[in-house]
Length: 92
Image (tube, rainbow, N blue to C red):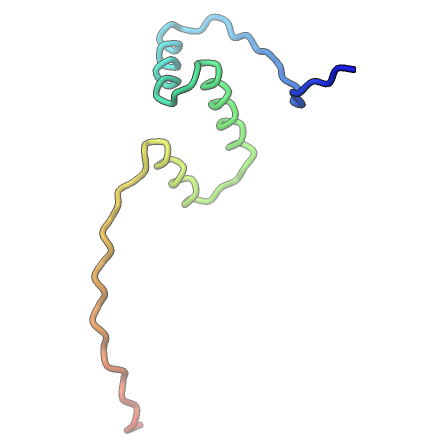
């Protein structure tokens, strides 16, 4: 008996009449991510459909958007403020 190593069921989709400009854009995006156009399309579909099913907070949405463009800006840590003397309540 032959057992398949692939435990995932997959489907093949064919998309016709793609504009050359869109295909070129997909090729560039795939190249930037080091993927084939097919792998890039799978990633785009997974990301688009996962985000519809998942509610995220504002901070998470901002973090994800910043990650897409290479991160954010590293801000320097602020200098600590000098310590104040505690209030004197001895005369109350």
